[in-house]
Amino acid sequence: MATKPLSAVLTGDLVASRKATRAQAERAMAALSEAARDFGTARKMNLRFTRFRGDGWQVYLSDPTYALDAALYLITRLRGEATEVETRLSAGIGPVVTTGTSDLSDADGDAFYISGDHLEIIGKRRRMVVAGKGIGPFQAAVFELVDHISAGWSPAQAEAVAMAMTERYATQDDIAEVLGITRQAVQSRLATAGYAFLHDALHAFRTYDFGEAAS
Image (cartoon, one colour):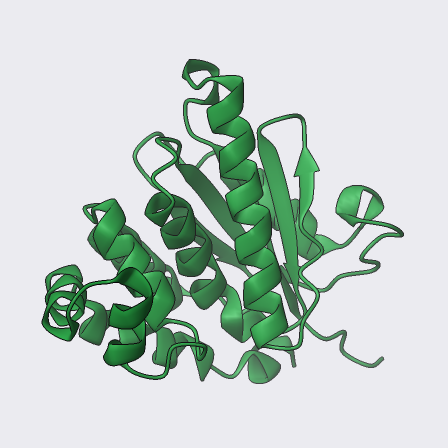
């Protein structure tokens, strides 16, 4: 029997959404949807951002090696927007039977179940978690460390990191020009955020052989 390829599904919801105004919640969802679109476009993937139950959302990644990149990018884009609303998410790795029709509302597969189940038990302080096929202590620990490091970022730091993660801005000078600040200010934001170390962690996860895990 042929082995089914692995995919990643991120299931998330807004943190303390009942305390947020309707305008804040809508702005947060719009920011997440736009971030998902930009992330997918840069990597030639359709993440099919789908909103659930008012404050819930989900995206699909055909390539599971981008799970950590996508998780961090969505969280930082939202925080960088300074919406005063944050999100938490669960990345589930596994086979996908169908990605649904018009969106992910009727999608099916292990990756969806794993992602949804672990969001329910993520806890109040965590913002990201990963589980599923090929995920062992090392991969889970990388997610946890990235979660811990990014938790303390200011909106300005998060904005700089999100921009540094995309190929649209090739240099810190490009980021500085868009933000209207000096290159030294960009460098300071990235340095205090620890982005150089996160860059290596993202690369390690991105180059992990999920194909071997699926066999």
